[in-house]
Length: 562
Image (tube, rainbow, N blue to C red; front, side, top):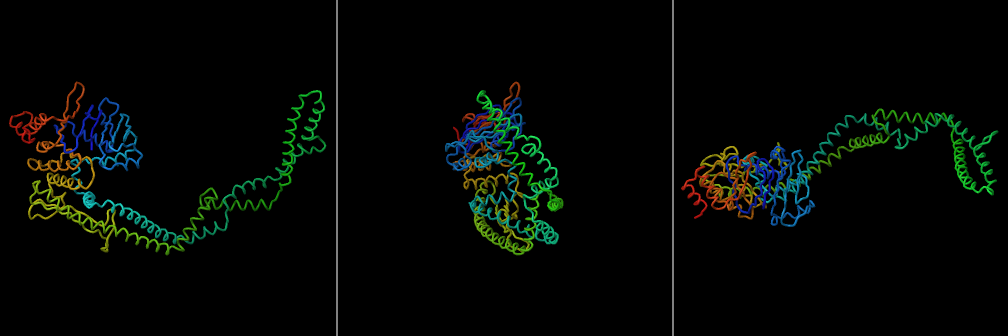
């Protein structure tokens, strides 16, 4: 639950630092005072989209930070799996937004992605605003309520895994049927292409070698002439002296004066190294002279082989033998599917059928638990709604099995169940979809009752109700407040933003949001009220701006204060 909320430079809030308590708390204030701004700031902590327009005018950045007490909510595995610091007790979430548009998120001072912030945020806070009443008409929300009550989390996880595997197999089957039919239409042409490639007997490394050999054979006479010339100059000068002989003579001359000029020894050594290297080069040139041979037949064969390779590459629009070999392998695979397609498709059909049966078995177990839970929900919702001014209420969680055109069960991402919450507030009225027949006040009471129903089944530290009292007043509002107080007594934090004194009076803590006009700006503040301040605030809510003795007395009565 939230222990402390800190906000800087967010919208009208210049600086806010407030401690929050467990149990049932209320927040009141005039319309426009900044209650929704505080909710917007909390939304940033839940990973919602950041808008630089939210930064207070003139500020370079805004900061929203909350300290949570999570020691009793089993978050150890989350922090361990995500390699986050955790002392076993507190979790600090911070969001920073700069005027340049940069947004950063932190969990216990460790920078994290927004996806991780959303993941932990969904486990820490549930904000129920007025627009969330629209969820009541959404089938996935209704089904999630049933699954929470039925405690179906493990079964749902098993089912989703099987359902995904089933869909993958179905996709493979559809692709296999489609590809096999398509390949059969092109079978003759593919076999012709494969024959050409197979007959070519391609080798991945041969193209570069053949191109080099073709160059050599095409210029064999020029190469041989140049090699003979080089060899003659180095080692076989004929009538003239060659390079090796001249070097040897220079060494002999220097050796002749070595006894009278000692510096010649180093020079002789260096010349000797050159002599050895040139002699080795000369021998290699001589060897190459013998290996080069003009061979027209070989040249013709090499060029024919290269023409075959180039023709295939051009035909298939590729530049290498590796790509041609890949095309050959693809053709072999496609033709194999044609040759063995029926057996392959039958095998996939069998796997699909087996996986369908596995998923259907889990789906039926889910359905059985949902049917049982739906009866429990109907009973509990009636018990909760009757005291909220609906003495003749009827509530039904109707489950029907999904089916295909042949009437057989049809798997969906959530199983084989479709759900509809049906509702009637009056005697002898037909049950209809709750979102279609319930008034605004009735929907608010239904949503509160559903939240109270599922709150006990999930470990959610903080629940915030933003004007859940829409469309109600008087004793009904008081009874709604008692439900929220009971939720807060179940080791959680429940906060209600309200305009009704009947609800505000039942909070164990009371906070007031108000605006202050400064010379250069208007700013919002929030404070925790003392008992005397609470009496005055409730009196204002009862009588308006002018405080009357009757309003003050009524406020004391609501608070049970003497």
